[in-house]
Amino acid sequence: MFAAGAALALLDAFLRHNPPAAGPLRSRLALQSAAASAKILRLNADQGALRDLRFAAGDERGPAAKLLGLWRDLAGRPPALSPDRLRAAAAALDLPLADANPLAQTLSEPSRAGDPVSAAANAAAMAFGAFPDAPAAEAEVLALWVFDLALALRLRWPRPAPMIATKVLDPGLRQPDVGRRPKPGEPAWSSTAAGAIALAAAAALDLAADLSRRADTLIAVAPKLRAKPAAKIVDLLLAEDCVSPAEAARHAPMTDRAARRLFDRLVALGAAREFSGRPTFRLYGL
Picture 1: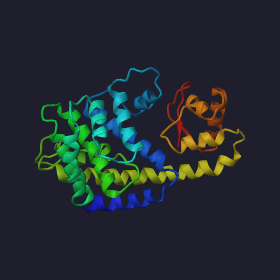
Picture 2: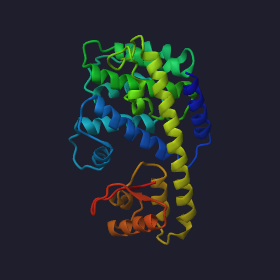
Picture 3: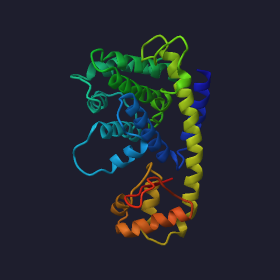
């Protein structure tokens, strides 16, 4: 609990200043949370595959795409344990929730009581317990989602930072006398949650430091970019985990070819990275 409080205090101090890297940080944490949740659900979807899914065309969304959308929605909107948010989250995980109002009322009290970590852990336990007949993996992912949402509410963050799912599978959290990972609400859950969020917040601080350096470099080289729509692409890179040239071209606006040339220029200047490693359909970010 002490380590969790210390790491969260430092992360809170970073986010309070609304740094340029806050957008990519939340977006990257959402991606990491989706990848960790995919492991819990036994889905074959790592971070690279999930990145690609965000740009996939078509209306049909599979379980992995819904999972990514769940965490990106968490990071992209102000925190609220409202019936609408809970209903949408349950639907993304195919969890039966005919009436979200009782669950929202149930979560309102524990999410406000005690220290932020305990409040979030209690809210997660209640969310998990609300689906006794549902698959445990789906209910656990929803509980982790509720944890991050309740934590953001207690810390009064304008946007949640998805974290606990990124470390809840860490083998270092396994207790020698417990054969499996404690589920929300079980006796060992509170210590497991505190350990996971301590690790996650510390890792988020490291990621924030790296992204801040990269954001500063991007901002410094932005005046050197000759293309008139370059400012909009810089804004996209300061808001997202990654951007495709086609997406950038739509926002700028500019041709796909011009967007690709601009990203190549940013990579050459050390202001962006290419994530996919492919010769085509490349993705760029900080």
